[in-house]
Amino acid sequence: MPRDIRSITPAFETLRFVAAVCIGRTSKQTKRDFAGYAVGKRRKLSVVPYIAGDMAKELIRSVQVANGNQRVTAEEIAGKIEAILLGLDEKTAFNLASIATEEREAVVDLIADQVRAMMLTDYTVSEVEKEPEPPKPVEWNGWQSFESIKAAEKPQYKWRHTWADRCGNDFVGYKDGKCIGRVFQIDYTAQRDRWFWLIEHVPVERPARENRSAGWEWTAREAACRAEKCYDAIMRLNGKQA
Image (cartoon, rainbow, N blue to C red; front, top):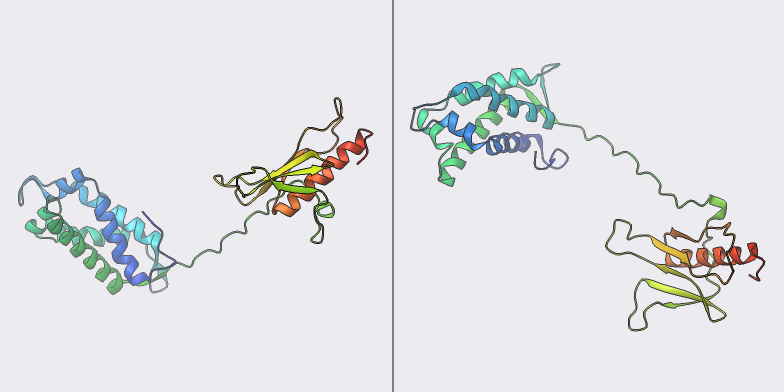
């Protein structure tokens, strides 16, 4: 189906919508086989069970159908849809494959109305209960809870926009006049809500980087604090003053 309307459309309207869509999406050749190549001529009614079966399956998927306390099968509904299709007069059936949009849509509307009337007369129809959406997985940036940036923490070094000619979501940090890192967002990706951070060149020959040098946080403040912490940790691990 082109869209799932079960959660927003009453069952009464869903029946008609599903029936109309199923007829509308049927291939041109199948419609021509059902309609014939002239009124009442060269019709292939062997396609009727296929059309009816497809529609019945979609109806069962889109609404709850019961007969008393018994659930109704798609096969039972398909049999009644077949009767509706075979009950169309030959002129009406021929118009289903008409090149005139108004004539074709009139037949689709007629079939949809008859299918809906049959369903509401013969069965108890109700909306499908919407299943609760599973909780979204919590995204983790690799740091344990005790390592997270606290709400009161603020960057200690100087941060300014990376590009002098414009403001934006890209910053570089400096300590004693030396660039220590960068924080930025990437607007055109699925991760645009994240602030990425990375450590710039560390003035240590072949540093034993026992600490991370890149990652992400949820805010620019957290990313800047993280970059500062990791820069200082790398410097300490390599015998430099933090």
